[in-house]
Image 1 (cartoon, rainbow, N blue to C red):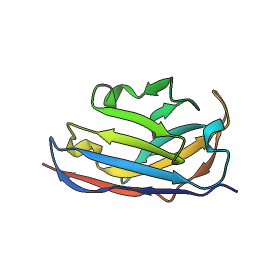
Image 2: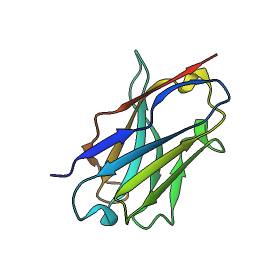
Image 3: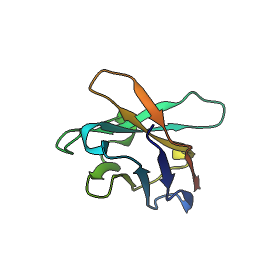
Image 4: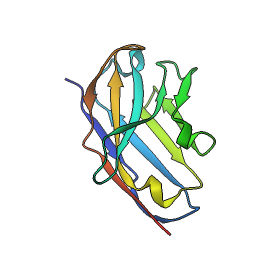
Length: 119
């Protein structure tokens, strides 16, 4: 059973930046796609970004394109989400998750890290 632990959240002013990290346990990290999701108060969880096992392919939700960058370091079993030009509407709990393959479900989730963007 893999464990995913997010970190790096916090309070930032609009226009600022944060980098989230998600550390995974186990020896199979490099074989899985990894995604980031977020959930704002009173809203459903939504997809933010995903990265292939090698890091060579990424995909983003339209509302973060050009502002967020997903990356991974398989030597550290860690996936990152670099967030720039943050907006108050980016305020949410951010979760990382493991995906066994493109089009398949996400089967392991972290506990989340809070990101709050003040105006």
